[in-house]
Structures are given as structure tokens and as C-alpha cells.
Image (cartoon, rainbow, N blue to C red; front, top):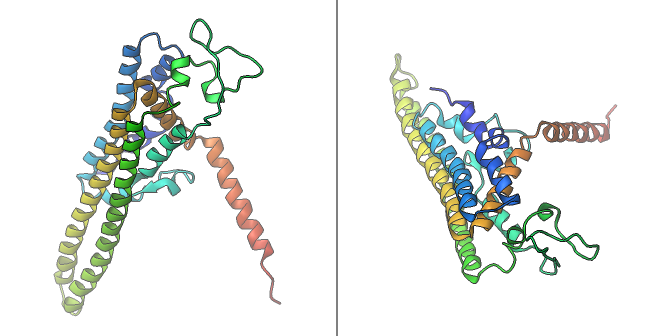
Length: 278
């Protein structure tokens, strides 16, 4: 079974038109009911969780694990962010840090209907313009409990990410060593003896790769779930909206094309600058 690319591109391309993403944005602009907004937060959160469950299911076929770990369908902008097959979990926590580190000197005012008053002496971030007060102010003065929990999540990542990365390196090194050791004694034999020896080693290696991939996805799901679970409904909504926008942006064809043109220009400039030997 080959990996269905529709599963993979669900992260970016379908987010731009998925009902949960669009409904969440509308609810943030007009949050008449926290209950309705909470429902839309749950739907978009489930969208991300379902993606990783789908990837786990695809990984059950050992034939697909190499494709999942080294996805060639990713754009040139996404590939630097890929860690063990999908987005690096640091991306999620760094996004939260961006909210936590919003300018403390921001000055705002509130209208009678709960929306911003536009005045020349009021500075409002572009992403919060025309947003209700409770939404725009949701990340101001975060609770000590939330900040402490984010610290704990980041500390956990500093342990788990290197551990899984090392497992991957060790698995690759052990596989190479065992392939050579298994092939060498049977190199002069006729028949399938060498193939059988290497095939058994390959099967064990693929099982380890599947295990590493599943653990990495489990970590990604856990981080997103922890963030959504520890934040208020407004904070969680802004986080998921930003994450969706981030992923959609990195699949934007104009942006990808501009990146490719920039790389080509840089390569050509470097080539032209090389000294010519006569």
C-alpha cells in the first residue's frame, strides 16, 4: 500500500477550505457564544489530531514508512521544519511563546458594544483589528499556571526530541552495520542466502522506524493537546487559527515559487562568482 497523498496534504491545502477552520475564524470575529466558539475549537483541534492518527495508520505498512519519514511531497519551505516525518513540535511551543511575548505596552480601548474603538493614539496589532475585546486581550497577562505549564512542556521536549533523534541515528547506524555483517559471510554463496539474511535485518529495521515515527506523532499530538487543554477557549482559538494560517501559508504556491526563484538566483550568483581557471 502506498501512502495516500490526500492524507498528508490535509495539513495545509484542505485547512484553507475546511469547515472547522472557516467556522473558527467567523466565531473569533463574532463570538456571540463561548459555547459555539468552544465547539469550533474542538473541531479544528480534532482535525489536527485526526491527521496524526491517519499518518499512524499509514505507517502500519512497513512499505510506506520510508516515504512517511522522508516526505518528498513537502514544499521547499516546509522541509526545513520537518522532524521525523512531520512538523517539529518546537513549532507549536514557539507559536505559543509568540502570543505570551506580545508587547506589554500595547494600549487599547473598548467600545460599548465590546469592539475596538479606532483612535489615532491606540495601537492595535493587525491580527487583532476588528476583533472583540475578549478575543484580542485573551493572551494579555497569562496566568502563572499557564506559563509554568508551557515551561514544563518545553522542558519535556528538550528531553524527548533529542532522545527520538538519537534513536533514529542509532537505528540507521545499527542497520548499516548489521547489513554488512549479514551479507559478508554469504557473499560467495549461490542462491538467495544473502538476500534472506539482509531481508530479515531490513524487516527489523523497518519495525524500529515505524516505532520511532509513531512515538514522534504521539509527541506532536500530546503537545497540541496540552496547549489546547491548558488555555482558555479564546487563547486556544487564536493558537489553532495561527497554526492553521502558518501551515496554509507554507503551501502557498506563490510563496513557494518565490522561494525557488530566490534559491536559483543565489545558486547562479555563487556560480558566477567562482574564479575561472585558464
